[in-house]
Image 1 (spheres, rainbow, N blue to C red):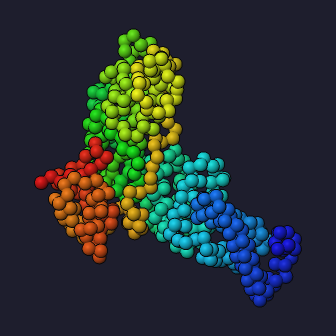
Image 2: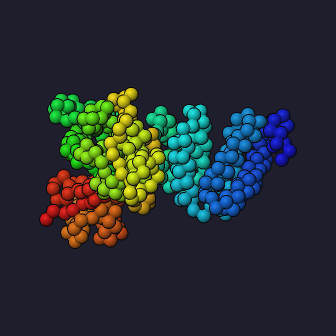
Image 3: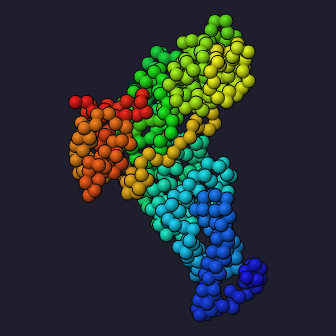
Length: 489
């Protein structure tokens, strides 16, 4: 311990003496590996006990502890002049810690927690240098995991959440994928899936939108006073990343959304591309009354705020209750965030019998009313009301995460899936005939009940079969009720 704490002259001298022959190096290797293991178990056990007393996530504590121990021994190993045998001894000692710790009850959960740890760090606005250092530690821990499949299946789900619902750095995300891909047990399917997802929200999103505008743009600009373009694309090769709130699509958006979907399905038929309208943003013109200081104003808004703008393009005064009911937004937090954004710019005004109400409004209460503001901010004719952080809270998946372990990136290209496709389609038809209208989650549950275990279709295969039935007119999709599917006899 004393020599370890010195981490300098004496340790280097010992290395030089013992490494002169293979026997001495072997002795040093065994001692170093044992030292890493014993110190690691002691330090991490102390961290885990503190985590348990504080009722915190013990798996997160294990990961933070293993990274801390690895960082400590990296500095120690500098005295070994980069000797690969001793570097492997350090990693072997760390690996034994993970397989020995009594606090680790499930290696599957440990892999998921490492993916969540990476997700937290990548969205925390760390500097480029800090991000690179953290990712190198994550890759090291990944290589130590007794079971690596749970990390490889969980990371794409967290990536989809970042790409859809969080401000993200394209450069950092690319670096993360590239760094993880260098790990020896990282699969090509994992890398391809992550790269495709990132491309969908960058190059594909922009290029397809530009293609659409080139084909239809002139007619739309003449006939429409608003601009709201889906700018986030997903496809059925993505894992499910479903939001826990459902927003209705404003009627003003529906025609253009249908045109977008039709266009995308024609230019990329095998990708099964769709768009996430609530994650898109755009500009809508809000018409203010004639006696207002400005006759109209352009608002850069998100979907929930567009619903609010539509309401006040039709009426100038609402009660809170009627406004919430008309917007059909069931999540009060989403509604209040949109309302406060408008009121903060003076476009809307919240009041009761005593006059204007202090902002921000914290809850939906009876006796409160909303009207067009008498003093809107006129310094800009275009106001950006869209929040920096995405609206609402989100969950990772709507089905069991195990269903995504072996899914290929695009099931429509997979030979086995092509052979199974007619059988999966027939199963869906039987389920729909028996049940009528179903959500996707309900459909998956009934397909599992209907299918023998040996021929159980994956989530990906069900999605492709469902899209096929929709394209042939056998099934219709209804987005107004949280996303349901109905069979047409």
